[in-house]
Length: 294
Image (cartoon, helix red, strand yellow):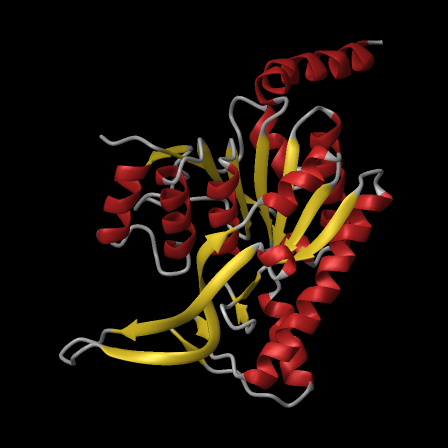
């Protein structure tokens, strides 16, 4: 009996959060180890379906970098990176779209098998994600900056959320692959964190949640920072506390906050039910980045 009462207490603990967030939109970037481990895949899908059933509108944006790299290797296509961006020629872009399309349908299937109603989208559908070519500037000590053309790598210049809004209003869960379309119909490979942030801005989402393979943001003593203001986040980037791999994610969170998203979160997707633990518990499990100016 005590065990049953404990379960009831746990549900009641979540009630204030359910009440607060019912009807709100959460954009969740799905990536890292959570996309590779079979149990974590199932748990993630369960989390998304539960959010929908308690009245929250989840929108999923997924990555696929490791899977793209693996497929390119199998096909004998070499990969080259400039400041972390994969140089994407036409052949590589074909592989990117193929792999992301496969992942997209897998995520849709996972959610549907758990009782949800997911629909897969590319950023090209309904011109959801409008993009342009990204030019990457590299700065090396003692040398003038150099600009590199990295092919069909894009940056987001516009988001048309009508398709997402229509699906959400019809009780579907949108699952979005991070491919954009240019003004001439060309495809662009875009960083999934960046896409998630821009979509969150366009939807004026309550939360942007980035699943990663680390616990969250840590200070110089390697202690997890539970809540971080945007101004402080920018300072930690400048002084090197936030390292290279985390910089794009933190910048994405800060940009989303300035774009109208209420709160952003960087959490460890290797933890079972990470999304629920971050949303429905007081402590959370990662780092919450908020728009503090001091």
